[in-house]
Length: 493
Image (cartoon, rainbow, N blue to C red; front, side, top):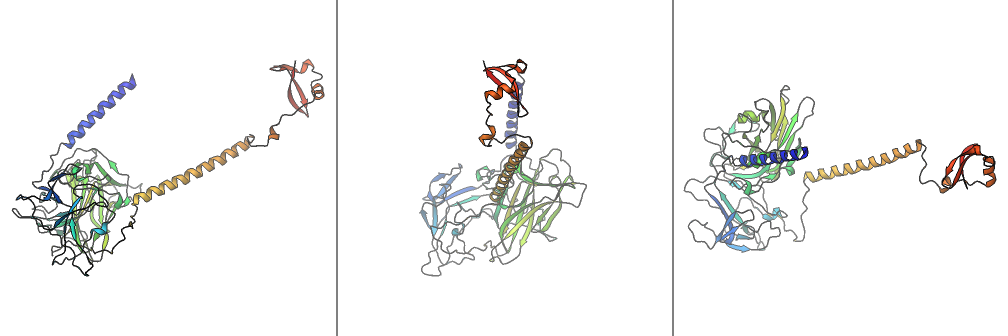
């Protein structure tokens, strides 16, 4: 009866919790972009992708709202084809009299299922967006370069989403004493967008903005504490609900240290091009109800081994707990932009300046954008690769998590093996000390002694009743002494 009542209570609590989650997810109205266009290049009509989004073909339509295109369509089967839409068709353009600052080749990402480039540009009211794909110039007659694209998405967004809002001074520059204002003439290219501590988030799950959030495990150098997952009721104070989807704030990675614990850092390493400024956006959320005052949890943000902000406090940023907040920083990657990629590091570490406070910091999401230079250039160190054999398969590095799992499994197996050996020998020593006979002893050690009738008569004084001690299954039992040892003897009636 008690178990049944307890089960009913648990079911009721689970249903109540699910209702709270549904209400929380519907609490904030999703941003609805005025323009959300998905173009399937080289195809015609409307096509529905597996995630339910409708893509419009750019062929055969003469509507005034249709994109104006040049080049010819092409259909082929991809080696790695994750979705049929929009990767089943492409629009190809062959070289013309153009010069491109930096060559880009899709062959550089062979082995990947898809390649997506995301940019943020400002278009004045009534203006048009022009996108041009130009193949590389031929250097030899045998060269056969061409440009192609499978799909194009155009989604409008609030002006202040990534550009500096009016009335603000801009984001602080790491290692400098001034701020950088991202105006509408600056173009942004997405480098990385990570859901910290959680799984990847598909574009269909991102509140009408169609952004993809990758898991962060492949970019971690120092992991801090184990990732935490929480069901949260979101509040957006002073920020738009399209800053990040609710799912980003349901997981986090944290650091925690005090006088009894050693330093515990969180570090991400992201490859970027040299010669550009980068916008780094941190998404944070304090979900613990007992932490409601500023100054209770402080940490330091370090970017490229330079302190970006000390005494960082999520409660101070948002004014209270339970509020989604973000923090922007600008960092300059010095060097020749054609010299290749280098690693940008972002580190969360305890702030040991104030020993009377809790040293705790957590991160829910991370975005990194490349900013265009004054010449409106975002091109990095792309180059045309050498021709590769179609049969050769490029090796892909195992992520750090795979190596960590292998190491843990190896250590665990070795530990269990040594433990089994130790237990085996301890049992043998214990058995030897207790006088137990080894079960593998020779048969002669366990063979019963045989007595002659004369020996039995002598030892029992010719079956004297005084030596009779009882009866057994086969007759009377006598006691007798042989070689100064007492034995029990049984005689048949």
